[in-house]
Length: 345
Image (cartoon, rainbow, N blue to C red; front, side):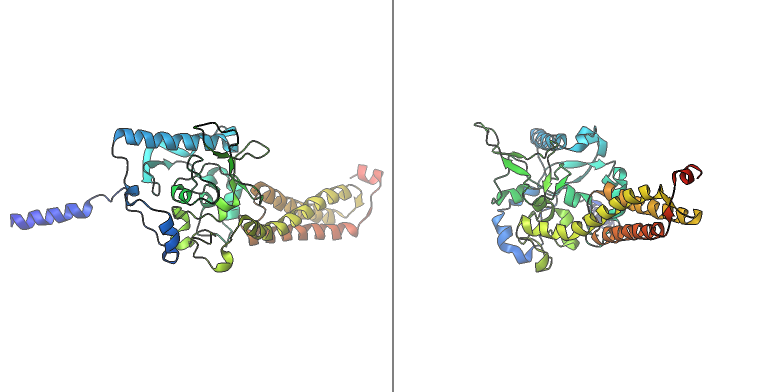
């Protein structure tokens, strides 16, 4: 009886044993065996630091890397630090393939970027991913980067970048050669835009071949890289110019509609001052302009020009243009308003 009881207790304890905090690395890329082989994966990579010194070394490297990246961002200029988003009092799950755990989030992107959050909720293109998948992709540190044709950095790209801004310029590169590097200094560094901010280029944002990026594996079918993606062939882009061409398909109609709304608002507000309209017509025109301006402000504040929700934002600007055209039609039926009439309004 005691033996049976002991066996039952042992089974219960085994069932309640905590899960391995550093589970073995698994890749679900059966169609890309050659690529995975090229990564030369270390089977022990999933193991956490075993000594205090190893932990300190790993933490120091990651802290310095993320602090540098954040310091080159607009977030930093606005006073954001690690603890703005992370709760340093709590330790969460291990980041994929990293040797230390990441502090739990106490604030997420949408808590500050409310307009972008609402726009992205309307997307039908990238429903299965979130903000960080594109704006904070897994990228190597400059010390580990070996150039655009390297392979090793894909394996080393296991930690989320903290650069945030995506630069869609087809010639922009996140990493640039450090031509002034002295002996012992890194050969690559972060490129800066005209405002002095580092950025994520569209290859790393949209077409990276980093199987360590868990947000793009499984249901999300990988990113748009021809090396690792399981998306349809037409959605795998070989280079930066191909990605940019797809982005233009989203952004061009939104930008064109946005410009029409802006020009219409400026023109019609001026015409309202010199056009004689019945009170009901004037009220309707102002309502149309208010609705058009609301769309104009939303698109401007979102700032993605279609990338966050292509069809939704295109429909929004078309609606805004419709409001402008309707207001214009009402004004066209009105007559000229004299200075005395304007004064007596």
